Amino acid sequence: MIGIEVDLFIAGGLMVVGVAMLLSLWRLVRGPTAPDRILALDTLYVSTIALLVLFGMYLDTEIYFEVALIIAMLGFFGTVVLSKYVVRRDIVE
Image (cartoon, rainbow, N blue to C red; front, side, top):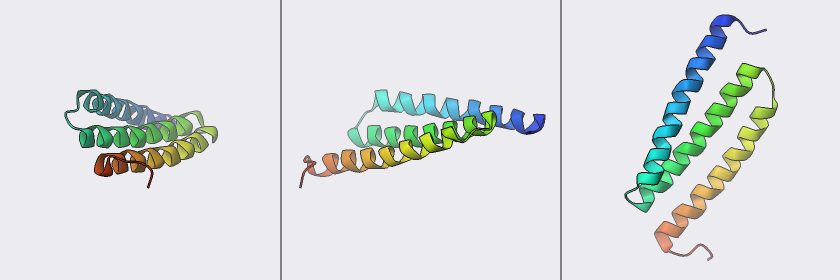
């Protein structure tokens, strides 16, 4: 069983990552350019992964780590596709 001090630090980390997610969402909506939005979306992916890992540590279960891995793979693919679209204005080569 994890100690109460570790639970408090994990809860604090969850709050910090939640604030980071809100700020990334604000940048995603606000813009002003497409590269800014892509970077905000990528940051939102990373923050989601951190949130899931911390939540999995808090609940002491492994399922959230697997979900974080899936989101990491989808986030990487999405960032590559969106970046390619911004640079070339064409996704398919």
